[in-house]
Image (tube, rainbow, N blue to C red):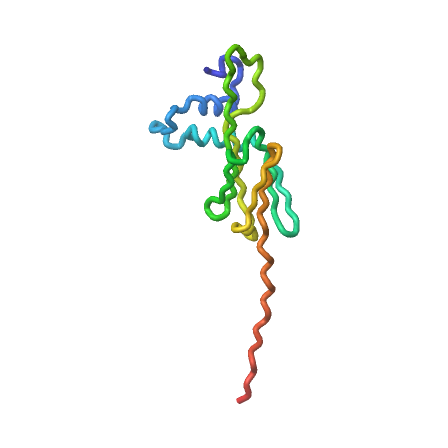
Length: 158
């Protein structure tokens, strides 16, 4: 579909149009700089997954809405030593015989967020709890380094 026909001749619509024209297999041999479908899907998932981040004296807390997902459907991972990845996928409910949707507004598909963890995050002390469709991931902080004591050098006499 050409958006210019409808009077939408802006860079945003041009980009959206380009993204919709990507090959299904995600392998763009004609344009190696073009985004793959996986990249576009992940970008949409990250933009559509709301999250809050809180910090207290002992930890960082990530609160992410994961509506309709069971705890077993949610993955919490640490990639590349410092990237917290939270993901899951909500599938469309199967239609029952004789029933049809009149309107579908609830979001289905991939949910995902990535967060770069601060240097003082303890990657070995991460907990995740899902309650009522809200995932709470707590990353404990490392204790602050002890201040370096000055090194005393004994002065000798000659």
